[in-house]
Image 1: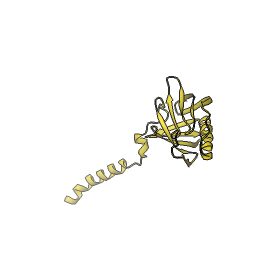
Image 2: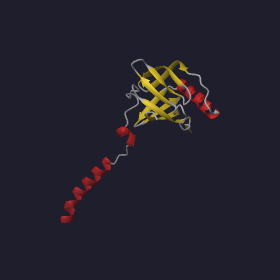
Image 3: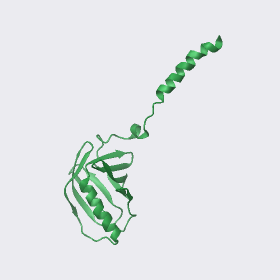
Image 4: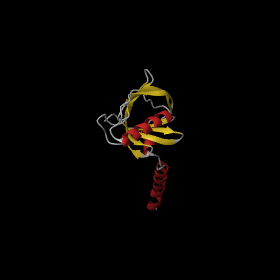
Length: 153
């Protein structure tokens, strides 16, 4: 009879544990939803561009971005040249508006010139973003266009 008295308690504990075991993605707990995330005051270093790793830092540093909501400006470096431009953010929507203003130095290596061209084209094609922990993802037509890490190297 004593073994039966513990059965309801064990059953209740088992059902409670199963109910609490609903899978949940780790980032859904910690990540701020992209629709409420603000880019204001943030700085980001390029890690990956269209699935390819970014080149290591050059004398001008690694490609990076910084956002300022006060004047709706994005600025940074392509790794060869400095740039700035205007942006509009509405929830997860992000658009670089108008042409980017850039210095016009030639990169030392042909590969860096190509990365710079792809980097600026990616910025101008960006239509949305997401922030997960210390990672910024820029999207273009639903595809991941670039991945950045928080801060500037």
